[in-house]
Image (cartoon, rainbow, N blue to C red; front, side):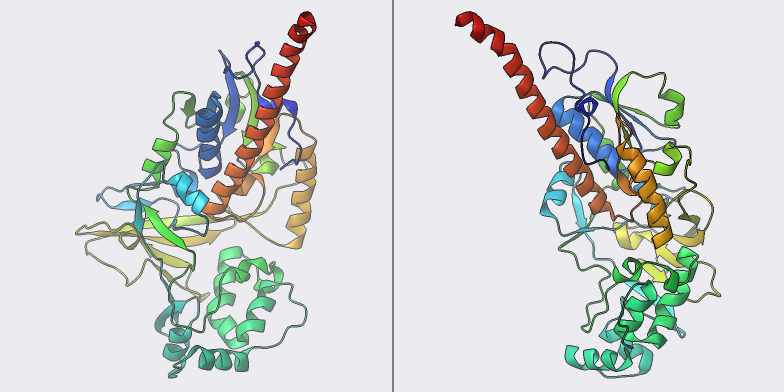
Length: 410
């Protein structure tokens, strides 16, 4: 994202009252109705009175967090499970304007050696996998230390895991899963990928350790509907921004799509991993013990199975599950974090900084693997900078208007 905000970013009207919204056209065109685009649209409309047009090529709002009721009446996530977790009170407070919450702590099991054991690895995992009776954190830490293989210069995802827990556990839990998920060996991926997954010596079997872990009570889509329900926001779905950018009057573009696509892949395509989802409805109340079960083995084509009733708390005679199959082709989901791709993104980033009238935001716009709360935080921080710049510009405009009057009085 450019560090300096161009004047056009302020979208100030040309009339005498710098606080009055435009009377025609839009102040902002926002591409993408996911978290980044929707949060910015809501803030710009409700906070600054701006007129905003949001376009999305998909037939729905909510981006990858979109959820809906399937044919059986089960609330499912079309693009795989999205579990909200954060340590930020500010982000929770903001989203709470648009939803109530259901407390939910996500738990994941990994199918390893014919067993289903907690992941992230904890003391329960070790005891179940190896028939141990570790009773304290200290005993578990000592056991893992005995397996760990010292890596002096930690650069890759493989280095991170082997340094913490050794090669055997790395092979069982991480190598196959990572190779399927990313299409690369962990030795080829940046250390940030596996650093996201902790190893525990206690019996905490929650997948996340954040202060706030909860789900929108009525689903993500309902939350997005309320967020975008503002008279100054217009939403156009099934719309590619290239079809409207020359037909719509607007002052500034906020682009939440792939940054390389915006520049017509001038330097080549930024690599992404995609996913294919196989949704199934089963004539039974429950399919598995937890919300998600991971399958690290490479001879199993899918990476995980998720069952949504665990996430939503919905009571229903049937249940719906999703099998996830990673793919090199399809919609861009995960930026692939390695040095070569980072360098390519930096070329696009420099080009973006030299491009007036457009700002890039979100996972695709900034080529970074953000969690949902991080995207919300990024959007709120960007809005705060816009608001401050707008306030300063409005103050300058008022000062310029008052100066001739002061001269007349003198």
